[in-house]
Image (cartoon, rainbow, N blue to C red):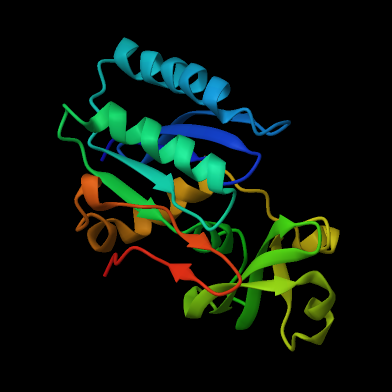
Length: 204
């Protein structure tokens, strides 16, 4: 399958292209939240490269959160606009699930993503299987967790640090294509978390 993977749920803006599930190109920008400017430029560069080798995209894959509210809204709205008249599927990927690709199969553990100054988005896993749903936790409470912590946070040990990337999105969808392809593009929405509310698309 030929596809383009997009990761813009945090300050990272990353797009990768694949032909026959093999990586062709990847571009990352991680110095700001200026996705409204960076995303169209990077996307055009990746798309132009695909056109040069006459490669048609079969689907797009994108991180749907949890993460930055604004970043998720910008990236998903942009991609929906791209596919609106082309009838190309969008595969939604939870950000924690993509980051978890960057770990080894190590039993039970947590993946976290910084949310605010003193809080993070957190998801528990057993190997590569999610346990429960993601939620918001105070950074101070992380010391009370009983399993290793990985993810994208300034509060994580260097060896456990995993940066969001379209490469992780690509790796995840390659293994989970049949499950993720079921959702119509128009019905895909981001995962938004607050202290008391959890909203998630049904991708089963």
